[in-house]
Amino acid sequence: MSELYDVIIIGGGAGGMSAGVYAARGKMKTLIIEDKRNTGGQAATTSEMENYPGIVEATGPQLMDMFREHCNKFGVEFARGLVSEITIADDGFIKTLTTSKGEIYQTKSIIVATGATPRILGITGELEFRGKGVSYCATCDADFYEELDVVVVGSGNTAVEESVFLTKFVNKVTMIVLHDQGILDADRTAQEQAFANDKIEFVWNSVVEEICGDELVSGVKLKHLKTGEITELSADGVFMFVGTVPKTDFIKGQVALSPQGYVITNEKQETNVPGIFAVGDVVDKFLRQVVTAAGDGAIAAVAADRYIEEEENWRKSVSEFGGTAMVAFWNPLSKESLAVINQLEQDCKDKPDQRVVTIDTYKSQNIANRFSVSDVPVVIRFDAGQEAKRVNVKDIAELDTLY
Image (cartoon, rainbow, N blue to C red):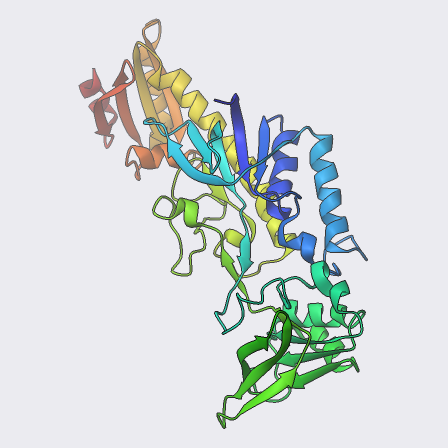
């Protein structure tokens, strides 16, 4: 069993390491668990990084090295492992993580930053030739194809940007695009770069039907979507850039996911499980980029800190208090709430076994939701940490019924 962490971040990509910087700088005991040998996630496999503000020119690996250095500065701990299970204590506070090798870690909060993995289309020959001519990472494998011809499947930003990068090494890139001539899914700037590159050719209205070869890839069979005609194209490699699949199998059935398997979060990066947050490409969101992952990480780390502060205060003030705690749920806009709190404080004055605890329902939504409090003011009496009675206060005289 490990020592108790304030936050454990599952995944060492841009979102995870950004959360690590903010958490550790905020004096939280922080651990990042990464299943790969190197941190950086998908960004570490990206050739060019041109749209991260303030970084005019850098490769993905270079930027991720800077993220890692920033984590090291503030004392973020790192461990290698694949988290396979999360269990939560009966009181909902302490979470236990178990890895595929049986290592056990305990923490007060969790930030899921596992990212996504390249989508497998299941084309005939795709898995057979993976690593033998089929690749999902231009940065990793481009130098294997110097002066050779390659095919790129996909037409989004990643496909176009990686095709342009490949032209620094290969003889020719042929992009297989399922849209009509001239239509790509990438943004305008990326499209202009691709169309202006003499080494990039396009096959429109087509999909790859089969990847062919013997021991290595030798070509592809293409199907024209409008005519159904099958043609063959010689190629020494096939690069697949057709989207990603979120890595959420280990929390399926525990944390709410979208139909596509992405984690559903609110504006604080909170999941439906108190104390579990999610950031980066694993989240159901509009834009998946390094800059948005970094923003997610900052938000989640601060939200996790607030969550821990609220939960520890609740335990100290209410659940572990042996006397009577009069818990007033309120918000600053309610005049009735202020009157109720003032009256409770008068009633409990000079009674050492009684105390008044105030819960702002906006700031402490997790605790308010736990006790199904939506309107204010509500006062709940806890005896030795157990709910004894509650009143939805309409008239201040109703407080007498609590005693």
